[in-house]
Amino acid sequence: MTDQLDDAKRNLVKSFQTLFEKQELPAKVIEFFPYPIQIFSLDGTARMINKATLEMIGIRSVESHVDKYNVFEDPIVRELGVADRVKQVLTGKTVYDKQSLRGGNENAV
Image (tube, rainbow, N blue to C red):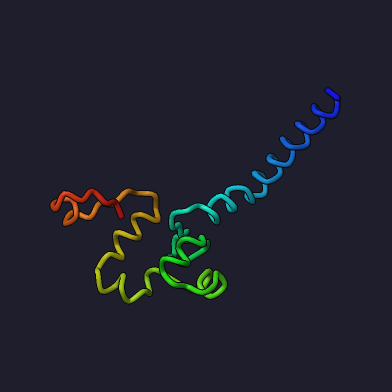
């Protein structure tokens, strides 16, 4: 019985290691995370989107968005004049909206 339990533990650990090596587990966590997440490449192209984002934005399918949508070509992003801030975020920086901060809202972009 102990040998079976040890084998089961080893198999479970091996399964998780394989999932992490292939990046499948982090992708599944993002996919089913309850809050909207969208991942972009540095050029602004959508590379991954989770179900919560699909529902929030009203996108019908991942296929219609991933590798097709580019945040820098979005007319709303252009109209708001936030493309430079989005570019900074995509390079790993935290960017704050100064107007929101003045109003007491501490939302980071």
